[in-house]
Amino acid sequence: MTTTQPRYSKEEFARRGDAIYERDVKPAMEEGSEGKFVAIDIETETYEVDADELTASDRLLVSVPNAQIWVRRIGSHYTRRFGPRPRSEES
Image (cartoon, rainbow, N blue to C red):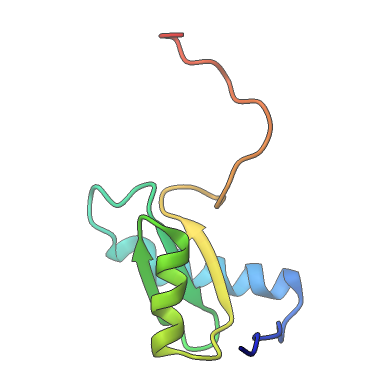
């Protein structure tokens, strides 16, 4: 199995991925998509959405075998969150 090597700096990856998300993906998402993952090829601007990030990425790789994939959670600036979280009022 071959692995795709990054062709862009981390900053360029993030810039392109976030721009495509804001311009194309976010406006196209239906209500109820929040929390799902979007895998975006930053070169072709093709994307896949799924509740599982690996499934979204795998589907994207079927259509774009050498995709440069940027993953983001719909409705959030982050894919994952580390560290403490504020307690909810119900706790």
